[in-house]
Image (cartoon, rainbow, N blue to C red):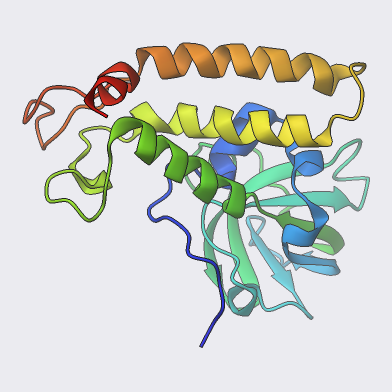
Length: 227
């Protein structure tokens, strides 16, 4: 029996969505204690430049999942500067298949040479807990309830309408928590993200049903009036 706190499901964005919006900040914004896997023993076999393997880490057993992201930071010859962030497409034991963010499999420059690569430093951190909290808040704002017939997430016409609101909510909270003074780029980004979040929340309309016309659209304003 687990004492895991109850978390909302489904959630409306993934680490991949957050990494696309946050860029290199994603690495800093992920708390170190939310690490799914890390090591310096990663390797790409010859002929498989998109499949990262580990001799010591069982990714599947650690709970690594598709749409999380991996940060490759060494060897510096192949991952200079801040390294590279790639999306995880699938997980199988001690191997994960990678792809470029928001790209299909085998699209773009592979992270490793065709001949293979060893001594790869990797880290997989997640913002899943923050995403669950933000998704719960979004559900409350727009009257989405998995326990009510025709009002669960599966009844929302296009969940992309909620993705950006969730992404921006998570990033606003994380930038705020990581900022200690009113100086620096994180302090500036708090205002930028907050402004973008307010604009998104003002314009989001939740359309219901397979065709998006099964009921009147729900907005943040209609929900407030109905309470």
